[in-house]
Image 1 (cartoon, rainbow, N blue to C red):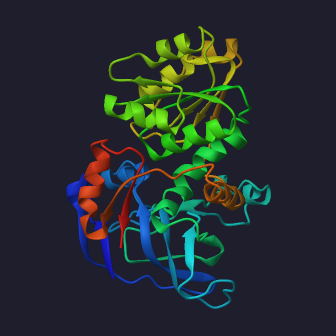
Image 2 (image 1 turned 135 degrees about the vertical axis):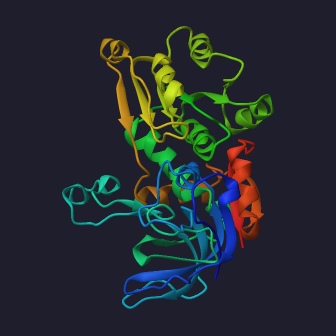
Length: 342
C-alpha cells in the first residue's frame, strides 16, 4: 500500500510518500480502507521526537480515521465489507485494575492508533474490531474524521471532568485548533459562555462564528487581563488548556475561586509552572484528561447527526501531499482540522 511515513525525526520534510508494508489482521481485528484521516498535534510530537513511537521507526501517524471495511478476522461479527465506519482511537488491555474500574483511558497498557501503532496516513489501517463503529450516513467521511480524538477529548474534558453547567464561563485556548474549535461548541451546547484565544486576527470571526462571545489575540493582548475584564474581575469557572508552558501557568491566573483547569495536551512543551498559592487559596482543581469512552463517542456522533455539534474542517489534502498538510499545521494556518483523504 501507499503511506505517508517518516524514517527519522524532524519537520515536515521528513514525511515520505512511498510503498509500505500492508497491515495484517488476526482474530478479532478489522482492516479498514482509509477515506479520511485528520492531523493532530500528537502527530507533530511524534514526528519531531518529543513523543517517540513505541514501536520505533519507520512510523505512520494518524489517530482519527474514517473509511470502509476491507476485511475482518476470525470471530468478528457486525461488520461487513464496504461498510462505512469510524475508528475509536484508544486501546486498553481490559484487564488491569483501572480497566476493571471502568477507567480505560488510564490503562497501564493504554495506546493510540497512529501513536503506539501505525495509523491512518495510509491507504489501509488495522484496528481491533471492537474499536470500529458504524459511521452514520448523515456524517461524511471528512467530517467524521474530525470527531474521534479532538472532539471526543473536548467532550470528556468539559462534560465528564469539568462537569460544566449552564451559566458558567469557560476560557478555551487556541480556537483554531481541533480541540479548541470543538470545545467552544461543546461549552455553548452545555449552556456556558465562552472566551477564547487565537494567534492571528484573521481567526477572530471564525471563533465568534463557533459561539465564542469574546476573542483574544494572545500575540497582542494579555489573555488573563482580557478574561478578568470580560468577567468583571471574577475570572472564569473552567479553562481548557492544551498548550503547556507559559500558557498553562497563566491559565491558572484566569480562574475564579473553585475554578477548574482541564489540561488535555502539551503541544508547545511538556512542562508548566504552577503557582500553588492560587491553587490552595482559591480551592482550584487541576484536572488531567485523556480521550474519552466509546459510549461518549457515540453520544458526540448523535449530537453531530442532530446538527448540535459541527466538525470543523479547515482543508483536505490528498495523501500524497501529506508533507504539505503537516507544514500547514506546523505553520498554524489552520482554522479547525486538516485532513488527508484518499
